[in-house]
Image 1 (cartoon, rainbow, N blue to C red):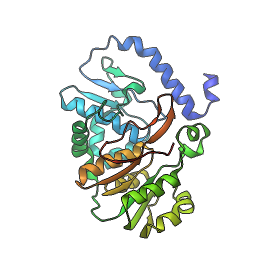
Image 2: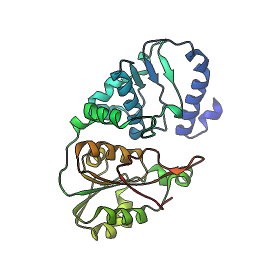
Image 3: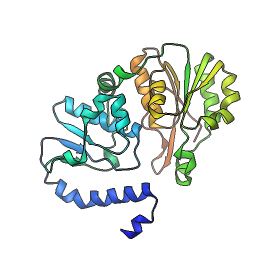
Length: 279
């Protein structure tokens, strides 16, 4: 335990979660309750990742197989924005001894067309998310740039960083000129410095959305024209925009991360415009 205390909090928390998972895997074989709980780690996942888990819970529950997601720190602000998510979530002290439990990345449910279907995705969005999202029918192009921990932490930069400026220049050419660009990012200052001139060449007006995860997600997911980056936050914005707008234009990079399985994102909707060459 003393060794764990000396590690960064996010890493120590994840290691502790893995230890608990290893210690309960045998007992889990004998749990035969009438519902399943996805055991989320206390750190490491964020809203875009959680949405794939809630999608799985929604699909299974709708089919008569009750499924819930274990509540994790940070979920509360999303419950306020999307109350239906709370109904798909269980607090730790409400998990029953006999609840079936699933652990690990193989249950993260993120492969489009393999681990979830378009039908299940659209049903989840229509039931739980879309009613709470303001629809933007204007010609505004929303550009969603993920920076944050991807570029602030060395081990994540090695895995996720790519030529964002080059990709966005390519994406703007694909999506065409617009009267207005709305830049949504967790690092708007970087975007002003490195993308400002580029964006101003493609639109008469460029608006930088203030920081704030919920507000940013509403802006991204309500858009009719969206340029995203290699983030589940962007992917969910694209999924939802496609449900809200029959003529949505969604552009994403094929690159997601450098892994032992390659670099391609398996989250992408094949109806989107996918740009290769940036990895």
